[in-house]
Image (cartoon, rainbow, N blue to C red; front, top):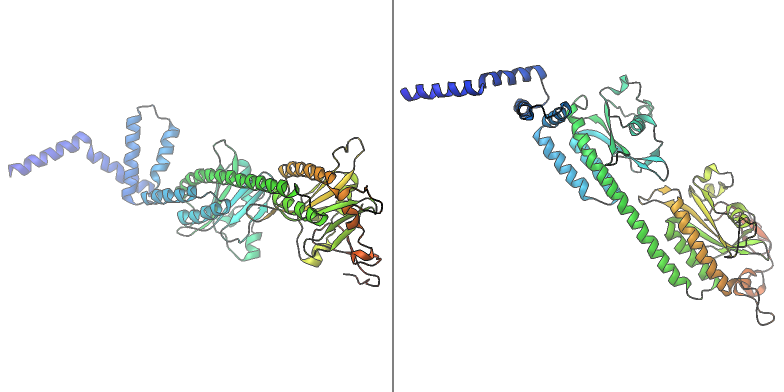
Length: 468
């Protein structure tokens, strides 16, 4: 059996040359010392990769590089595959709402969490918009509020293994809902410029008592791709808004180039103003200087709407010739909340834009208001109600200038006529109290209408004094 003896001798020499016995002892000692969550084979592979890295670095690799390589090496291969699949799905989506949904779904699957929340910072409203796997509609929270807000401000990773033993955890939510938050982990979403775009938060690990170091590594890598996906979705949203505004402007120019009647003019301006700034509702008032009233037509019923020239938000806009921007109607004393209480509609944001004669100069104290365009509730890309921003203001001021030029050129506001007894188109529309207009001599009663923020006066026949 000389062959077997020679083979055994060859194996012993190989083991001595490559120090196999010492390497096996180190691997076993490392396994017993660290007692990792990963399987022994995966941990052995990790230790071997780290030993090779140190040998190959020859002093050129820093401690930070070795630590980062060690972190990546600790992640089991199956989880790396899941991470790769999750990032592919997240990066493949560009529509904002769908991007959020995929991020939530993939984070739950990757971390085996019971719930996941993503807080996305919206610069326009200076708020964190919370989307969660257990919420049907997003909600808004202030930057710095709660654990997620702290992570957003400090860029600090927070991993709490037992929430009820941590003073930073607010137990009120659990008390209100009955849900028990055992553990959580929050990770800042930082873009390539170092700016925090939001926070990703995982709650209640399903397959363990807490989120491990491996979970932190996975979430850290995932958030890098999440930041890119959110940036792409933001660019896409801005492109869609710009395209819609350009289309609305072209349609508006085409429509207003025609010689429209007074009601058609009002309805045309109303429609295109809403499209330009994504307003849920819009009302256009023409100023009737003769009666010192603002006049319009209800888009819902086609009925005449009249308010005193100085009444409400639209009245202030008309008399002072200034643009009025209200981010929260219920915090503004000028807003009449009775409107919402009667109709069930919730008014949040308001923008009233004066349409001034082109020769007007508000700063100089001399101006002439032709009309007021009032918009209600800015509709965000995800369907939520936001507030009108500076970009909306710039677009509407340009729009109002164009509308002013059309009103000045139109026969609507021309009270001078070539034939005696002839009235302008607007004059005929304003004089709706004559018999020929179908209305008798009338008083006025106040009622609340869909455009919000003021008392509206509607024509009615004498004797009809019932309050709405």
